[in-house]
Image (cartoon, rainbow, N blue to C red):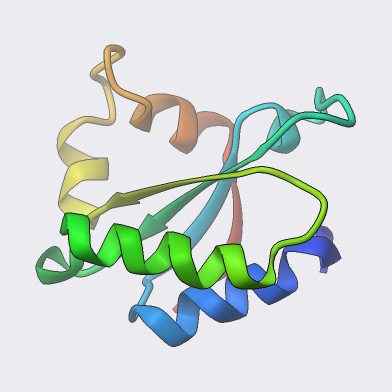
Length: 105
């Protein structure tokens, strides 16, 4: 795995939701990270899992296993990625352009 420090986080995410994909994006994915940079993850889930409750559950699960770094988690559906792929006021075009898929079902 290219980012072994994320292995426990990915495992926690996959135990919490039936993720279709987990994509790393932002400075870590671009190779521009500084030591204090966070990890930005977009978790692609079925529509019924795109809720605030699930997002909170993911953060709680991830916070129990992450060590020594900050983490930002976003939830999206496949439909979100398709619908907003060209909408530059959202993060989705950036995720699709520069993201690194860490997990795909």
